[in-house]
Length: 34
Image 1 (cartoon, rainbow, N blue to C red):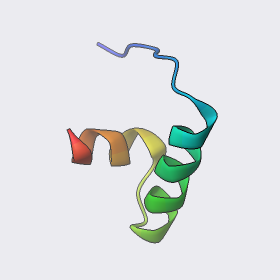
Image 2: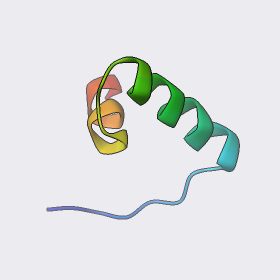
Image 3: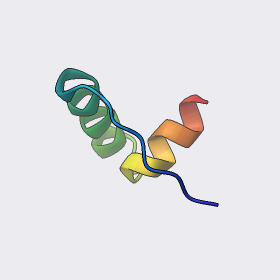
Image 4: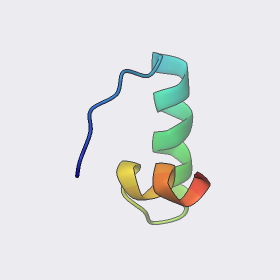
């Protein structure tokens, strides 16, 4: 089940950058890290 969470802008910028570098979605990148 999907959940919404609030993350700080600086964390989201890091996630977006890494997701782009790894050709993943933002959700996919967070799931990969977890």
